[in-house]
Amino acid sequence: DSGVTQTPKHLITATGQRVTLRCSPRSGDLSVYWYQQSLDQGLQFLIQYYNGEERAKGNILERFSAQQFPDLHSELNLSSLELGDSALYFCASSGTTGVTGELFFGEGSRLTVL
Amino acid sequence: GQNIDQPTEMTATEGAIVQINCTYQTSGFNGLFWYQQHAGEAPTFLSYNVLDGLEEKGRFSSFLSRSKGYSYLLLKELQMKDSASYLCAVTYPTGANNLFFGTGTRLTVIP
Image (cartoon, rainbow over all chains, first blue to last red; front, side, top):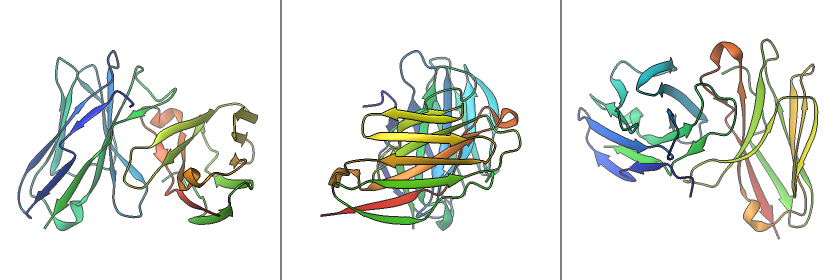
């Protein structure tokens, strides 16, 4: 158990819909990272927050947005969903602003868009 | 991204040794990670190399050559449970707030 909690574990929805994925980092970790993993593809970095502020942005679509709340949990919002958005979405946390050590990954949220 | 290249698939026999290679863009390189990921599960940390040389941790070892842009993960005394994807990931100072992953090497251990 990494200490990172993600909900929901599975989500099935239709094209055009909007979903919210939630992540609670390890106790004490201020950084939260979101990654997308499509079938047979590597982990693609989406966005990072540190202590409530956006710190880095990767290949995140404009239809996607995220935020980190004062209690440090984070939410990833995916809107106008397309079939190609079907993927595993991982949240990871660390205690530092940058990747200087291990990232702790949650179990992921598997999104299926029909 | 970052020209991270590793073999797509490998097969090895239980009890044997396997080496998984990874090459990456050297310009501005900072550090290299290896993660293990079983199908449908979260990646778990194996090793982190910043300096040249070999880091040994039980049955797993990781090697880095910064000048050559090359790393390998060595797995000894293979067990069936080692069947998984092994992800090479790198950080660069300009992208210090994120980790760039390769597509992973799917290792199958056979009896």
